[in-house]
Amino acid sequence: MSPQNRDLLVLTKKESMNPGELEHQVELLVDLLYHVENMDTFCTANEVIDLNRCKIVQKHRHIQQVVRERKLKPFVFISNKN
Image 1 (cartoon, rainbow, N blue to C red):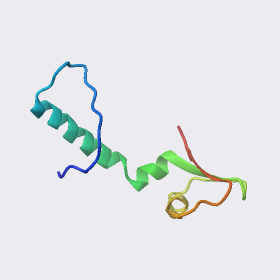
Image 2 (cartoon, rainbow, N blue to C red; image 1 turned 60 degrees about the vertical axis):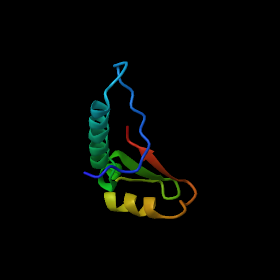
Image 3 (cartoon, rainbow, N blue to C red; image 1 turned 90 degrees about the horizontal axis):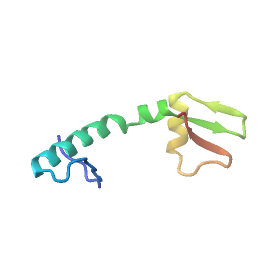
Image 4 (cartoon, helix red, strand yellow; image 1 turned 30 degrees about the vertical axis):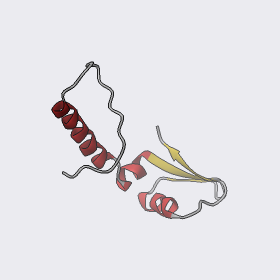
């Protein structure tokens, strides 16, 4: 597994950790984020509210199309389902 170039803030209950433990925790976080941060899970967790057409879009293909547009149309919102 190659680590991604990102900044992570890791908070622990322990006052001090040895570098090996910290590196292991960061590797686990990177692995977890790799599986969570993809387009399929994004489309599952979000929906598109289009007030121009008075529609709520939940199909993955349509959500991907809206997200990939360079500029969103007025009154089209990406909303988290949570």
